[in-house]
Figure (cartoon, rainbow, N blue to C red):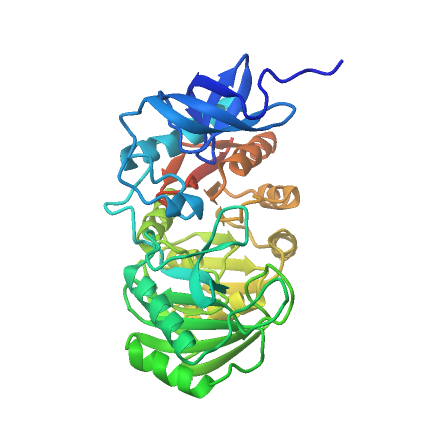
Length: 455
């Protein structure tokens, strides 16, 4: 028998918002049928128009507010919501922090796990925090523009202020855009796979103020390349590195495999927890340096190192956590699948005169098994996986090594909760509260630190 949804497309309804989803959408229920509504906050009473109906849920948009939430921020620029840059900007910052704590609590509750979640660590200024930008370059109304795509589309909305980005980066993007116009360098045309400049990437050191400009081109050489490069570093005195990245493929992937230095150095330097890091165009480096220091310090504190321990850092990247741990441990082993990142990690170890760290290229789960076979006995294992969480084989390798502690740095609450259940089955349980850290203010994303100990 076919179950009929209690709402129809284009129907107008009066509803009360009960909750927010992990994506920051308001939730209302009509006869237990959930409607997901953008720009709606818990406690609000609104009139909505149904925009889409699926089998088990629907989507709607607000046409009128009868009761507004006390946590609503009214004076906002809707461009940031349209582009998905700041989907939570309409929610007051203290309420954003509560929402992130609540998100973790809900997921653990649903999984029937009795876990305490501490209040989210926030920022004094929850805007202008990003140290990296990647912006598309397209032709809009006959003119080369930089900006951001409208959500769920490839329609570019021109922008000069990105709200959550370091303002010096915003200024650099506009300067580069103006020079691209001046030298009449064609923007990439996605539909016909023509044109030259696809994207501009800018990185800026939070402490060092060194700046890197990466021009992502469809061609091996940009027209007027020498003059363009000369003018960029004249216009932007902080620039110490200008890079050409070539991506000739018809793809949504931003960067290609060919990278060439056009001016200055192949890397910029910045500091994190008193250590110096070289950051190349392609290396992963956390985008919110102020909160990263809190996040990593939390991981180090929770590892409770005395200087005698052996530590494994799975997913070590360019060595940020590994090297911070190395100052407090006897020996640290780091593994990462990206060869360039491991090259950077080795350079960073030398830069910081740390000799008690070993870095290997490989899949974390395979390398753990290799280390185990070689008799490595870690006291602590630190994991900081991508959004998809940990492979089951990694959890098995990790627990087989029998560390006293596993410190799990997570960027996705749902995979964290799934992985914790698997650790429980293999004899590890959560110790102390889970600590959320707000790495991405104005967005629904939340990072956290969880400690697991052997039962």
